[in-house]
Amino acid sequence: MPDSPMVGGTFCSTVYRTTDSPTVGGTFYSTITLSMAQHALDEVTEAGAFNPSASTFRNFISKDLSSQFPAESGRYHLYISFACPFACRCLTYLKLKGLDKVISFTSVKPKWERTKETDDYFGWVFPASSTEESGADPDTLNGAKSIRELYELANSNYRGKYTVPVLWDKKLKTIVNNESSEIIRMLNAEFNEIANNADLDLYPSHLQALIDETNEWVYDRISIGVYKCGFARKQEPYDEAVVQLYEALDKCEEILSNQLYICGNHFTEADIRLFVTLIRFDEVYAVHFKCNKKLIREYPNLFNYTKDIYQIPGISSTVNMEHIRKSYYGSHPSLNPYGIIPIGPSIDYSTPHDRERFNY
Image (cartoon, rainbow, N blue to C red; front, side, top):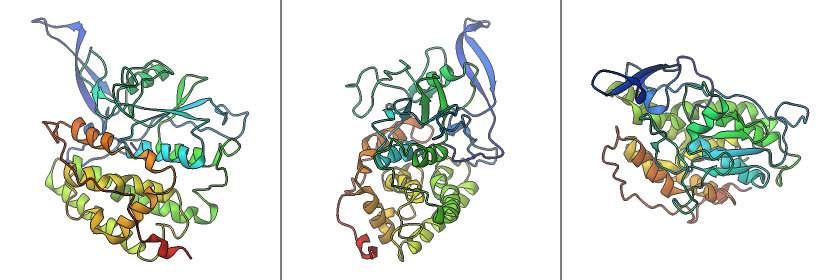
């Protein structure tokens, strides 16, 4: 999930029920101190605020074929969840850049499940067959049963979060990178020699400063802002996060009243990063994360903007609302203990929008 390195990553101790540490009475427990939280639900400070820690695998693929990770056709594999907005950023790049023929991908099941019989950790898992869960497939590449197993295959001593996306090197059998903001930059620029849509530049030089500035406040107040609201365990951090969230959404609405996209009239990385949150907002964040002050479909410009991006060829295939709903409502028992999935607004994002007024 993390978007960039952050200071003050949360530390935690996790108690596992195991079968190799006997104690009196026949019950087995061992305590393992971790250097990082294992998933987002662990990353809450003593003040009750959500504070995500940094991603850990940070290698780069390069167009330089002499590099450790060269941009070779068929060498890399992307593991995603259709539920995760950060993973879907990367899938969107595969589709838009025309890289899905040279970089394969696999999606996990939407709902977290137990990853090992020997402990109580729940996380992303693969289905046993391609027919078990529509939209998810087994890991035929490594035979892993879970994303956790991939991390442990890459580093047997790994003690951190088992997140998606995972950009995997088939040749070296390791994780290249699990930071979505860096993966999309690689996909944008380093594979152009083998991309079907090499001319598409989602991070053009003349807009880079504006994109970076926009990404910063969108990430902090919207992309992670919804999680700050949803995972807050005290009223004060929730109040602070929700005020910042809606100030940022209001700012987006104002910007989009005067231009086609968030950084002007050129579709960029910043739009993809914003879109993956907006498309989930009314379906899950409004209810599950208590972001109910105002819905996206109540913002005329933001709603039409979301529909416009959804209708760009290739993008709708990255949106699996069934997985989104199942994952959020089914994977956070502390927020939704009975796992009941609300009926939802069932929004049709393929209906006409008004954004063509900016096509001049």
